[in-house]
Amino acid sequence: MIRVASAAWPIDRHPDWASYAAKLEAWVAEAAGNGARLLVFPEYGNMELASLLDPAAALDAAAQVEPLAAMANDVARLHANLAQRHKVHILAGSMVERDARSRIVNRARLFGPAGGTGFQDKLILTMWERTRWTIAAGAPQITLFDLGFAKAGVIICYDSEFPAAAQALAAAGADILLIPACTDSLAGYWRVRIGAMARALETQCFAVQSPTVGAAPWSAVVDMNVGAAGVFAPPDLGMPAEGVVAIGELDTPGWTYADLDLDALAELRKNGAVRGPQHWSEQPAAPPLGLLVR
Image 1 (cartoon, rainbow, N blue to C red):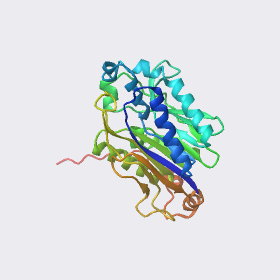
Image 2 (cartoon, rainbow, N blue to C red):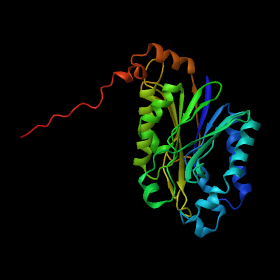
Image 3 (cartoon, rainbow, N blue to C red):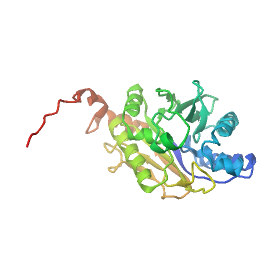
Image 4 (cartoon, one colour):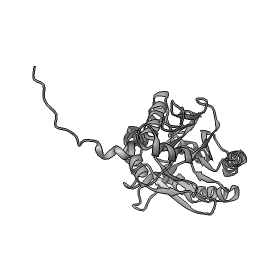
């Protein structure tokens, strides 16, 4: 059994860096103290750092990009220190960063207890990101993280509503899909949750959804946040019939914990009622369409 902790992370306004660092440390200490070995924070969780900027910049999505990207190394060092000190893996809340192409992307970084690090960029941008902001989609690549006890991949929010990345990760050996999310409506939350559950079903992986929650009217990017933390499984042999391993309260900050039985997952993949990944190749190519004339 491996205990995971999924954060329903409130977007708070901080007077200084110390306030932000203290909040993050308290959350990590709580989850580690409750036995979690993998901690998952949400998409844009670190965008609350815009509260450290001039209020006008915090209310301007484009103006806050460069100063926040300049904080990325400090944010990474803080998370790396906490992961090593508490001996846990941490998927940090994503934020804007500059990639190898000199483009600003939405990047989630994963930190290990032995000092290992890696990242995954968001691949498909939402309509809001395309039309009202200045960030770019990440380079078309996915990362499989070897956590020692399991292999995991990261699928950021809207990316979970498409099957290709999850299927590629599963084919490469993923056991857990980490789905950090930031949605500003109940419909948005359910789109990601339905996507997470669908990806768990079709890949026979666990899926961990972590949302931002609460209102932050001082922010142009994370002003409204709706969601609940959840952990999902393929609804088959040895797993909950509805596919829900654990679910938090809607719009309620805090950790949601789940104990993931990787041996049971392996048994499901071997002897379950369905074998989705084994049967992917049997899907027909897009068939020709007949035209019905009336």
